[in-house]
Length: 454
Image 1 (tube, rainbow, N blue to C red):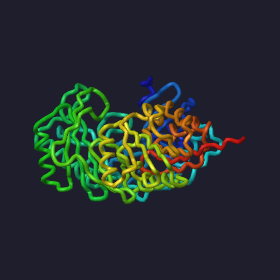
Image 2 (cartoon, one colour):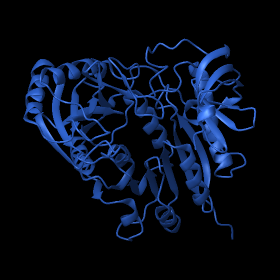
Image 3 (cartoon, helix red, strand yellow):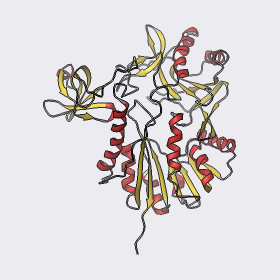
Image 4 (cartoon, rainbow, N blue to C red):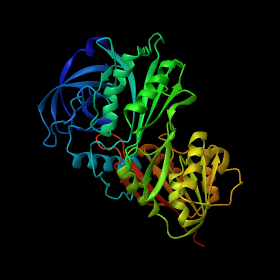
């Protein structure tokens, strides 16, 4: 419940530590935890109370009274308003320390591991212009179409003409696409009443050759978008394909169920560790192409040698299946998204891989079915919600020698590790910063089957 009297109040608060979502954590005079955006540990600040609950409150920074020695000037002109990033005001070394500690504390607090074997975090080679994909909502500014990102915990749009963590080609499109929308008289979606055409745009680039895909998410089809697609292909040679995805639902979910190519190609190609991979409009592909090689090389290093059978769960477009295939007799890759599995089949052929097999299914439906040769190694890269409990129990019964778990959420990783820990030792946990300046961190964890003593 929001307490209106306190909502507009400004208080002095000492920031004790960094919480999740990039918020500093202090305490109100009544003892409630107080989360404050854009603040750092050790700082004294004026903060406006925006929301009060029974056990905590949230607020925004009004003024820094005593800054942290780790505070830096943000190079992003939108940082104070935009909710896309968390740490443009913090020294990168401190950000890395925070992320490494988050992984360690998740294993202690959630997984109940006394001394989790967390290795030093691997930082990214670049903290700006590293992303190869962005998805941006449409809005109006001065009655003209704009693209941007939402403010933290709101749907108030911050109009952007550039983004410091995106490929510069994406920033260029943040200016070009609104101009085209205005030229062709395309309306912008109003989520309050459900009117308007343009909802979001997804932009994906290739770090290898700078090719680009653009996907318009709309409430309906419109012939003018075909002309927009043609204009983009003709004017910008690196735009290889333009598509449309129709989402008619009154929902926060970005994509609808149907995607159609308007012009050009439905895929672009990128490279990871010397292999080539197709990526389509919707398929999952790691967004930091420079650091993804480090992530997957770390996963490969968890192998103890050549394996007879490897399972790749949550396989996406087959990147891990392709990279692990030279180290196994057979790889079975399981992925629920049909478009991703189509890309995976093409990726295997593109790299000349003949010992990997793609299965379109949820991991839950296949792992416990007994329809595949039992694995010596399982590699899995699940979504943020982690691995389904049925899959974890099935893996414990299958009892592979090693499980290589790539996670983008330390909390669900630690939860799943506690379940696997009854059968497996946690051999190593390697945090890797795939998303500098945001409050996300990846980790590669090796589980090794416990020895059974006679």
